[in-house]
Image (tube, rainbow, N blue to C red):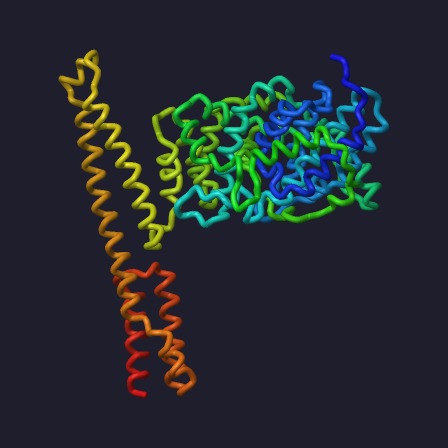
Length: 501
């Protein structure tokens, strides 16, 4: 294939920097979304990059996370910081200048991919970013890791499915260890610092990164085989296009990248030297899969990458993680993956609920009530489906007239639904009673105003009341129990002192 007109890579790369600098949400996504949006933008606006270099550009958009493989949610490695420094892309450009064609153009295209990743990553883990702002689970706090990872997983799946044809056309040309070493050495010179570099370790890091990307692709392909589930995922994350909190979403990101392919604005890489959000990195669940495989004795090699193309292999690793002593977030994701790739007719809502149920803090009355409500909604849908199946049994399923298994299924589900609904109604009544009880015993604000500072006795009683209320509130405002009784007693004691005065 012949190259397109000669490329001014410096102009293109700085144009990308300019567009991404002013983007609040550009490319704040997972690995497959990073790749998919580039492919989508290339289809929308004629790319300045020849097709034979697009594979390096697309792979480069994922490669700053090569150094994240050993890091947790709240810590990053030295390599992660190196790869997320825009100066690293500058070093890559300088190394490229010393190479012959086509290696020169490939490495420059890769540098563009790095920059396309960086600005998005600098805001992807703030509270306003889509992955953190999106609330998926009932008991997980807004911005919680499980919400972030689940949103990233499903948006990756949707974007990858939409752009798979283009991505397969371009392919992915990942960096090799020797080239990465050269860029690291150049980066070291520019920064005036020393960084340790071992080719064997670099090769291992690259292989682990590729394994994580492949794992994400395998999961996305498995989900794409379930059209009903994909439709539900599409509906649940339909706000991905516009984003949340006015931060922009996929549509804005695609438009920004498409604009970067054609604009002539210039901005020095120096302007991108910004570490916002760098230390807030949250690795994908695929990283956990790869680490689990390595911990289980798998030597991550070129040949071993084939394992991560098999959904059964990934499910086996997820089973191990689900039964491990990991934190709740990882267990939720492991169980979610098992649920959505089971091949059963599990709905998205049911899969999310089942994944969350074992980790939810049901000792919290508020969470227990919310979880019960979700469960009742799920059971209601299942009862309706079972009833429809029973009442509309096809004539050719003659055995059902003998076994009545469809009717029995409906009756069993309906009995469970009635039971769970009664439990939910009781929990809801307790909650309502608790709120009413709290209101009945709460001292009016004007009482504080009238008697504040009147005496040490009143101050002590008011302090005791405040402390009792905080404990009562943390308990979920129960209608009975020790927290309720202590709060009630504190209110009565305070009122008694006020009336005495």
